[in-house]
Length: 180
Image 1 (cartoon, rainbow, N blue to C red):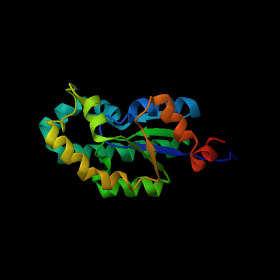
Image 2 (cartoon, rainbow, N blue to C red; image 1 turned 120 degrees about the vertical axis):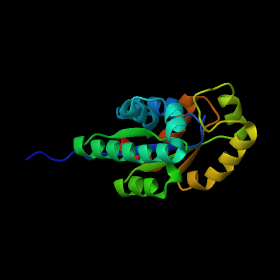
Image 3 (tube, helix red, strand yellow; image 1 turned 180 degrees about the horizontal axis):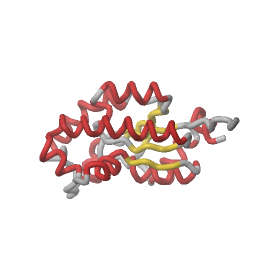
Image 4 (tube, rainbow, N blue to C red; image 1 turned 45 degrees about the horizontal axis):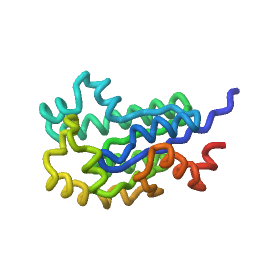
C-alpha cells in the first residue's frame, strides 16, 4: 500500500503590486514545488480576463468565481498530493470563507508587505487591475485590506528585489522545516 505523500501549501497574500506572482514563481522553484497563480487559474477557467470578469459580473461575481477556483486548486493539491506555492489575489481574503478554507487545508499564509507609496509606483500605468482607479481609492482599499493581510501566519518585508524576498521567506523557521 503506497504511503501518502504529505502536501504543503504556502499561500502568498498582499496588496496588488507587492510581488506575489514573481516571488511565488521563484519560491516554488527554490522549493521544487508547483506554483499556482489564482488569477491565472481564474482566467483559464472562465476564458476571460480579470478586467472583463469585473466588467461583466462586478466584484461580487468575481469573488464567487475566485472562491470556486480556490476550492478547485486546493482540491487538486490534496487529490494529487503535491506541495505548492499559491499566489492569491489581492482581495481573496475579503471573503472570510476563503481564509477558513486555507486554514482548514493547513496552508501557511505569508503576507508580502510593502509600503503604499512603493505599491503605487509599481502599479502606475498598469491597466489590468480593475480596482486601481485612482490614488485615493487605491489608498482607501489598501487601508481596508490591511487587517485581512495581518491574519497571515507571517509578514515579510517585500520592498527589496524578489530574490531577497524569497530568501526572507525561506528563513522563516516553520517554512524551512517544510522544505525538508
